[in-house]
Length: 56
Image (cartoon, rainbow, N blue to C red; front, side):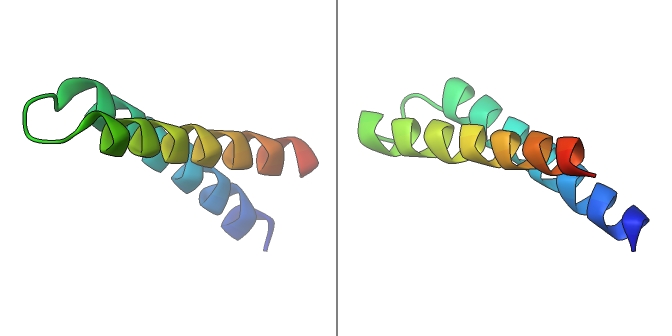
């Protein structure tokens, strides 16, 4: 069960990082509001993953 929780935390961290990276690289196709929302969602995912890792 511990391994599953750790894998879930890393999933949030990596997925959040990819969202932040995507929001920084895609400029012409999306509006500024969508990019900010994408970056915010990515940072929330990273934060949740780190908090989950610290909890275990």
